[in-house]
Length: 99
Image (cartoon, rainbow, N blue to C red; front, side, top):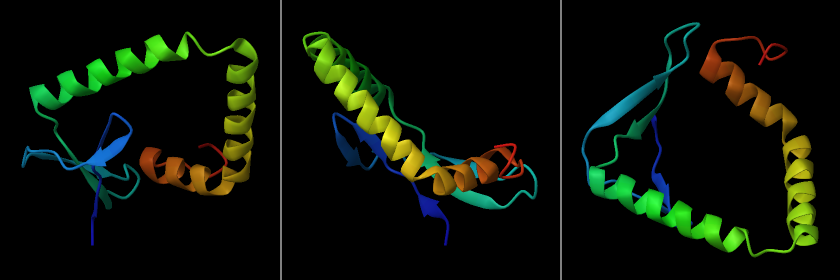
């Protein structure tokens, strides 16, 4: 079954009100990996407004706290290296080593 990817707006996964979908395929073998919704103009506006609001609040976070959060993010990326590499390989059609 093809993975249906929701929109992520304002910190929540939501279903798009649009029925239009964009297929995501592995370019190496044309395997269908997922379908992502083509967001409506209203959903895009909501996402942009949410991102702007998040940016404004992020500017107020002390540098030491931002650094701590980025270090945690870095560790999460390292912890999930293999999983992320496999996903990138599928998405780009490259080998794991090249992805």
